[in-house]
Image: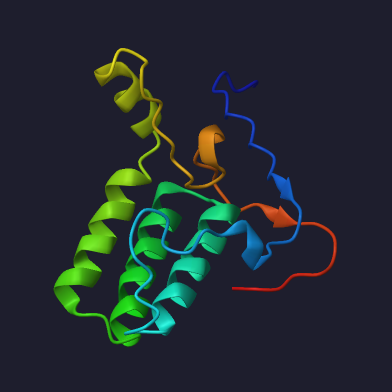
Length: 137
């Protein structure tokens, strides 16, 4: 008997060059506060590195929670770390760019750096790094 149910074909994992910290802009649109909490910029870069690799919506949720924990561990006040967490949850949303463009009639294009920038997509698994020279997070 032949089964009529069709399983969706698995999406192949993306192949990316190794992460380097020069791909990161630190805490993007927020202050790095390196003069108060030197570890904050490291947390931001590690978060950027995790977003670079991408993954599922569940991966992103875990990465964002780790980001919050690392900000607090760096000494940042919980309320401020919470605002950074909220910013990445909202700003890293996959439809942010289209939402902003729609609300502004296309005058402003939203930029979601998350999981590959303007080509944001959720994948079942994070991307595979190809090549050598991995440094950073």
